[in-house]
Length: 369
Ligand code: F6R
Ligand code: MG
Ligand code: MG
Image 1 (cartoon, rainbow, N blue to C red):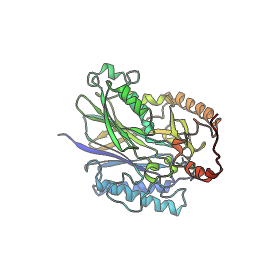
Image 2 (cartoon, protein in one colour):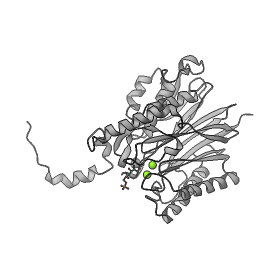
Image 3 (cartoon, rainbow, N blue to C red):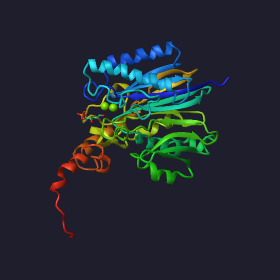
């Protein structure tokens, strides 16, 4: 019998301990309590509560489908309950990501990040859940491209007949609110023209061409686009299915062996290196960073999360961490100068509009040279 499940990661920052560096154990305990109750009540099949920096991720399996109002409402209420604890403990930015005062059917567009997929659980279902802090959804573009379109990363694209046809990438334009499918490898160069601008074009899902099977899903919510101003960083999540006609676990992890550059460090306004870390090192403090990613690995068994394994707690990422630390020093020496600081266009939701307004009368016309 085919077992069908929905996998949902719904995440939010509802208060930091200390500043924006971590989540207080009492908030995590509240999330655990709510998740355990939801499982007992039969709302969800199973769960794992994830953590990276000041963000809590509710990793859940259930049978209600993608965008299910009851699952989204549960996540929203859990974040509200955590916010109450955060307020009591005067945590920093309590309730920060709950941008709306009341829930209205779906958490999309209300602050929390969401990545979901409907799956038919395979005989063995290895699943990687990536959680990032101090960066934006486009941070997944490069690793997803490498996993599913770059044979120098994924040997299976050349060797495994099930992958040989390639993958379809669903790319979202976060500014114009539209989407497009790129069939890769044929349309890889066209796709790169867009996803190389990760602040605007974001890979939402990846599907195997051979049979249309969904292989990856990401959160694409950008808080500043929802709120119209800077209210904290998006800190995206992503899930990737692996093995047996999909990238091997090691192929899906290999892109993170390079500390590539992402946007989102300090005040959401700086570029910095993406550092893969084990759970122990997931709390950023230097200049509120550098940006980092953890990976929760699971074998799914009848909708249950067998795990997690701490996938980046492996010495083979030590060079990536060293590269990230070196790059962090290099960038930091540049202080407020671009391109360590984001471009003016990217700062439009922060201080720039006000500064421009304040200085308007001081600017004098200048004759052409
Ligand atoms: C939060 C973040 C932090 C804050 C910074 C300033 O996601 O990235 O770097 O932007 O700590 O925070 P405020 O403005 O609240 O003092
Ligand atoms: Mg935060
Ligand atoms: Mg965060």
